[in-house]
Amino acid sequence: MQSEIFNKILSYKKAGMVASQLHQKGKKIVFAMGTFDVLHLGHILFLEQAKKFGDTLIVGIGSDKNVKILKGKNRPIYPEKLRAAMVTAIDFADYTVILTENFKNKKDDYSECLSKIKPDVFVLNHDDSAKKETRRITSEMGIKLKLIKRSSSRIPFISTTSTHKKIQKTF
Image (cartoon, rainbow, N blue to C red):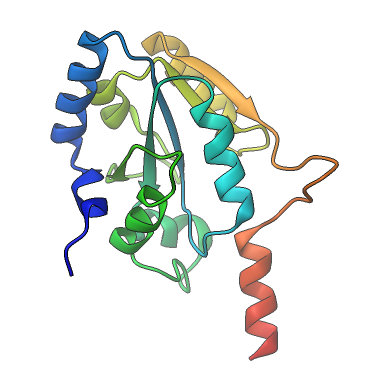
C-alpha cells in the first residue's frame, strides 16, 4: 500500500534539510515529542495545542529502545515506525522523526535532533519528568520552551500507561 504519510517520516538529516528550507521561507517551527503508544485523545489535543505555537509542527517519536528503557520491557505496544505513521496521519503534525539518541543516565536528551532541526519552539507536557533538563538544553540552544497542561475541566488526564494496565487486567 502506498501512502503519503510515510514521506513525512524524516531522518535527522532530512528533518534538518526540511527545517532549513522552512526557516528560509520565514516559517516558525515547533518541535514536540513523546512515545505516542496507544494513541488517544490526550495525544491529539497535545499536538493541536503544540501546533498553535508556530507554522510547522515536527514531532519526535521515542525509539523502541528508549521507550523500553522509560516504560518497561512490555512497551512499546506498537513499533516506532507504526507510531510515527499514526502521528503523521494527524492533521496537526506536519512531520515526524524517530528519536535515536542514546539516553544519558536514563534521561532523554535530544540535543542532536534539536541541533539539526533548530526549532523556534519546543513544546512539552507541564509535568514531564525531563522538564528541568529540557529547560536547560532549550535555553542553551536559544529555543523557546512552552509547557502544556495534560487535562482541563472538559478533558480528564489520559495516560497510556494506565490504559495499558487496564488492558492487562482485562486479559
